[in-house]
Length: 222
Image (cartoon, rainbow, N blue to C red; front, side, top):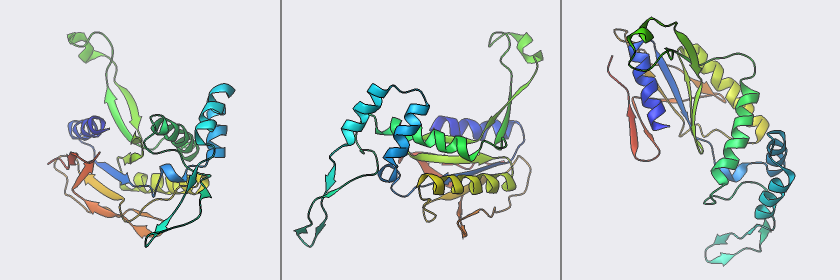
């Protein structure tokens, strides 16, 4: 995700395009996954009944207790979420999240348009004369670290609206306090602070964002 975010910045600079990015934080994302919904999505994506049953067994019989001032509550069943720390938890979350993104963006193809050429070998001069292709990058995802991208402020707001609705449909909650927006203007263009909202709240605008705790993705100078 870090490499992809940096490449996206560089390509937008090369192609003189604005880049709007919303880094979205989900409240307890792994803990709020609907298991019943996850089993159905896994079946829809072609997972075998045997494999789904194995995953179900890993999550059966889960209980938790709450400690308050040294006192422990009675055990209660945990019916939602995937196990944090489990090696397959990020994959299970990604399966559910992919289905959610498909639902959110089935109508329209909003994102960052990147031009590229893939004809001929990499160092063949004739490759420079090949037809230009365009691919659209709409989002970046690693486990529960997620970002939406767009070339215009209006498109990013549209993506946020669709994503917010999808989160509501799938039982996830956007943490508006920790979600942030970064804008990288095209070379030579004057910076204008974007205004992106979700669930009636304006997202904080930053010029630097930390991805995966250590790697930084600073706003590049035009």
